[in-house]
View 1 (cartoon, rainbow, N blue to C red):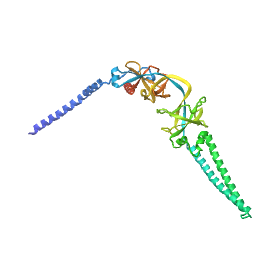
View 2 (view 1 turned 90 degrees about the horizontal axis):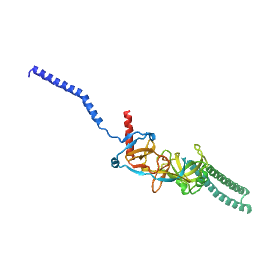
View 3 (view 1 turned 60 degrees about the horizontal axis):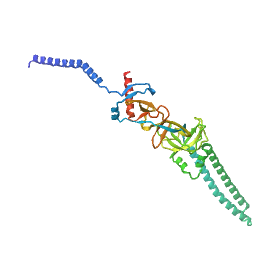
View 4 (view 1 turned 90 degrees about the vertical axis):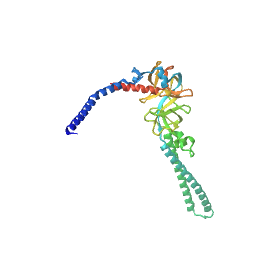
Length: 361
């Protein structure tokens, strides 16, 4: 092959490469436009049809009956119920380290007193023996008798000091913790209730209640950590508390409750049933509730295929053999239908709708 043929072949190859590059460069925009058009043509159908006026802009969702069955949507009709009125208040989980420290000092003072009593008994016997010997023709000197008497008096003074110290500690306990807890702490053998506190099986609560409320052992009280979504637990009445809570006005009382998730220093919310007062409302089942923005919601069925989100109250929780859930006196009424299975799916669809609107804006 001569040089001229080689040059011609090289020019042809370069021309082919240049033409191929132009084809790719100018065809790229048309390809991307076609791909975008195809993607836009595939759109997931939203279940939300309108952002109607509802609590905090909740939207109305439309879900055909057939799709409800496929998605496992189940509903229940709310029933009217009577509930005993309750007083809501607050309290704290009290650390008992200072009570334990006072108890230790008190028991130590008692132990010192017991040791001194034994010494006094021995000193009295020694003094009596020396007195007999002194009276029997001065077999011991008067000075020995006097020294024995002085030793006995010294031990009696120690006993009085120990008793005064123990009494002072006990009185201080009563001032800070009340008579009941002071009596528990000053027993040489702790009762089962106080042992539960010492071993952290239970915690001590100081609850502040309104001035017109007077609880007792028969008054049910339920508590939960402030801001938590855990179920209420029962607390047991102990006694009046001698010191007030500086942050809340009212009368203070001591209660105990299972330790569980409670920790010293925690704030708690309380619910105290008020005897003789009842109100009418509905119970929202636990399984109907979905949490969003740190609030509790349910989906109410307002038509054959329409659902809307409603805000509910979680201040009062009711547990019974028939049904358990949140007691509400406003918003929802008897015979309203709420979703008890599939509510989370409806919330997801509503949030998709909101995100889509934000992106379009």
